[in-house]
Length: 195
Image 1 (cartoon, helix red, strand yellow):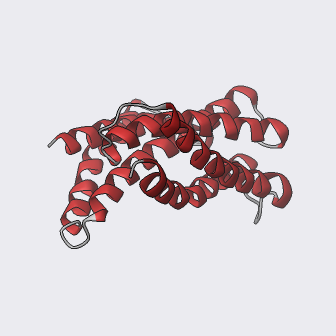
Image 2 (cartoon, helix red, strand yellow):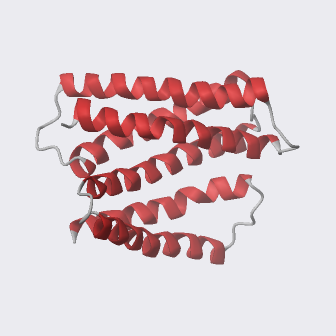
């Protein structure tokens, strides 16, 4: 029951964090839009977790992966929410400042990630130790290099393909960077940090 309450909280936060992303994509943010986003994710998150837990009877690692995926979704929306807020406030969607924005957004998501993954996804029973945090930082730093490097390459070197709007392209590049670092982080956290 605790897992479903926590994933509902994640759904609530995701419902709010998706709003700056939607606004930068040109959606009109109305009260109805906010209500549907927040309530929709609050209801959807436990349903998805229930399906993953059901499949976890066949592959037990799926339960842990389901919690990790829920936290990863929250981290992704923290990442994209902060990135879009910075783009919105500055009007900058490429160049050095874009790279800096991606790094700041990623680091905010990583801090969130450490606590959720330690105490919920991987259910570590140990207290916070400097050596564990250092290992977490190293794994995450490689994740940052994968994430930021790929996103910055796609935005600053490749540029918008197929006539994409630069803001949409910046978000797509950030999402690709997050996806690329997602599996690295799961296996790094599972086998190197929270054994």
